[in-house]
Image 1 (cartoon, rainbow, N blue to C red):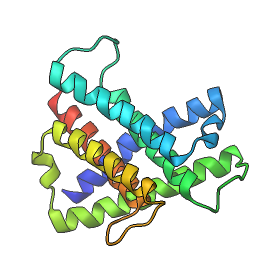
Image 2 (image 1 turned 180 degrees about the horizontal axis):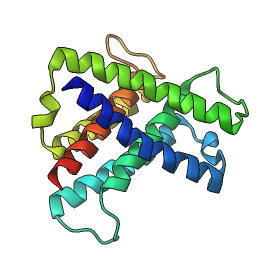
Image 3 (image 1 turned 30 degrees about the vertical axis):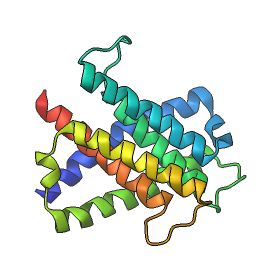
Amino acid sequence: MINQTALEFDEVIGQCQEIFEKKNKDYGQSWRIMRISSIIDQIFIKANRIKTIEENGVQAINEGVVPEWMGIINYCVMGLIQINSAYAHKNLSESELFKIYSDYLLQTKNLMIQKNQDYGEIWRKMLVSTFTDMLLMRINRMHQIIENKGKTEVSEGVDSNLMDMINYAVFALIRLKEKN
């Protein structure tokens, strides 16, 4: 089952990467000026829209939740790039950016595989709305970590939370595809 999950992960990430690359051609790296708090708030906006649609069953904008989940994945990768001091204030070529993007997603995939070995594939039995709630909880955690100037006593940092959020978003997209 883990091999199937790895393949499904790659499929979802391939779609997200395609969007990331196209948006990079449209907008360049304009997001590089954003602080991590702003990126987290962009994720919050998307997660909150998903929750509103889940609760109300309707949407005013003719765009479903799938693009929102994909946007969350891409914003999480942007956040990982922004908090890495090696890339701070550095102009990245397109090829460097896409390699860094891929590297972070490979790290995240490896984390998912390790956690799936410990937890099994329990996420396959979870409701998509639970992933939404888990994202919102982690956003609150990250807001608190930022207020604490990045210091934690015993908890994971912003980077670990972003990677977990990528995995939750991938799981949500896989579960949504299974429903269709």
